[in-house]
Length: 396
View 1 (cartoon, rainbow, N blue to C red):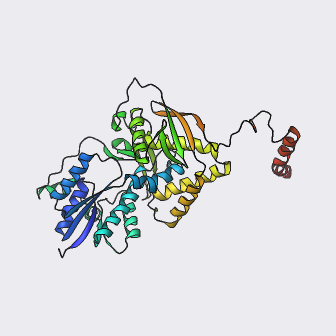
View 2: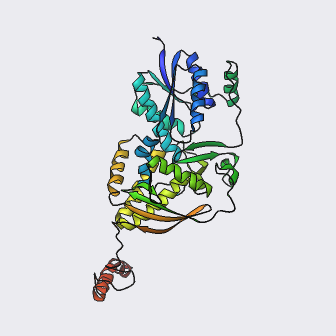
């Protein structure tokens, strides 16, 4: 048994976390690296990351398949809340980081380690998300952040590793891409300027085919959770992955989000999130059919609040569980089918049906005769409905 301190390092296999593994080992720690797969990791990449961990001198490497955990603990509530930050961005990175941090803490507890570490810099949102999660879930463990503490440049990190016989591949291409199950973020020179647009080639799906035909698609939900595509039952992970593959060919869910970072500055990020956009579009339409107007009003407010807490690193505030309880309750009748048609870069809802539909042509038809009231009753209602406004104007 080693007398060294043990540290669990959140490990992506990139330059920053590779530096952390070597640096922490040289500082006297036994390093266990943990890669949490929240989508976007093909098997060969996971094998490469495990091999790199061994090369860097880690005492152990752990790979956690957290895709199901990500959906059940995070994404199902983003769907229930129809959460798109700024009406466009699906919070893919925010959900991944909260999930990854929680899984890293779980592994650290199982291993009985004394410290946690991550490779975030001091410039972005992720440092806050990891710090808050680690301190909330494991306040007794030491928190180590070598990249932020040392403020090294990328070249300094490369040189440090090369001097120790570790040669990391050079950065390829002009864009940084972070792929996950709920979407892919894209950063480049264009995202640093509020006027510039990302070229189509920058997105993982690349240039769209000129031969795309409209593609009908039916999405089925049970209590707010997507369960089938075109009548085929699928588990949530496979369903999301299938929608990503299909939607990517049509350029669905591409865009650039401009908003506020946790640190208080404006930021801009490109994204490609086909499944998120298709599911939120379909789910929102189904809710319009089965929920009351007041439910819809408050759900929009609560969904936005839930998304803000997740995005801003407050996911472990007790309010989050209260909001999840509200969102879960609101989904009791959100069961049915939504018919979409996919076109290049967009989707259109063509129809929706549910056994809990509140739209019944046998009871009332908008603008036509109905069986619930007669004309004189409608006139009386309309008169009373406007009394407050009439008195207000009369007072002027």
